[in-house]
Image (tube, rainbow, N blue to C red; front, top):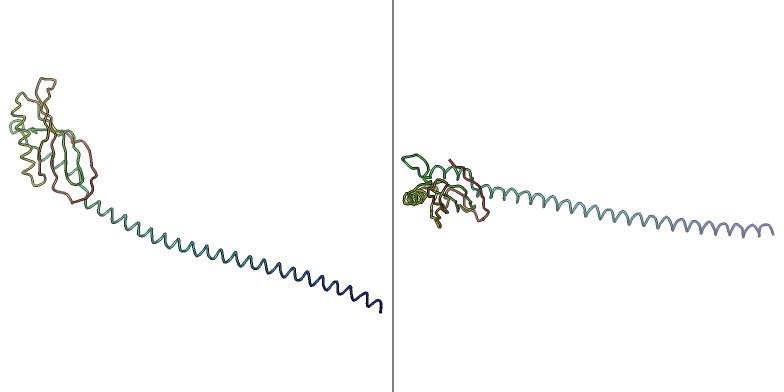
Length: 196
């Protein structure tokens, strides 16, 4: 009987230790399980956020691409082909019927997308100032009579002398170009007109 009484407390202690260890293991397992569930829910939320952001990015990209295409179309419709403008200018400059040369030469131009053009020009060197003034006047008349150009005027004229002591009139020539699409843009284009 004394043997059994000694054996019973030992079994009780082992049972209590086993129950305690089992409780600890179960508690640890539950806490790890809860951590894993929490991590999975965080990952699920991140995946949902990424999917939402991806959908927004796709929508935004599509919208941006459409806006870019629309803007490009507006630019194409409103752009002026400056090579065509220069070709039209070269065709319309009045010629001296005796020498068959242009009465004036334009050395530079600047243009705006609304069709307003400004040229720096000069007359052919000569000793006859009246003839040169007439060349400028005839150029203004020719441009105003053209269906392509209009509103031509010369705001300034200056006199210079070349190396052969010939007088030359330099002038600024403003004109509007009619053959172009309307545009609200005020971008300017600059370049050099090829001389003949």
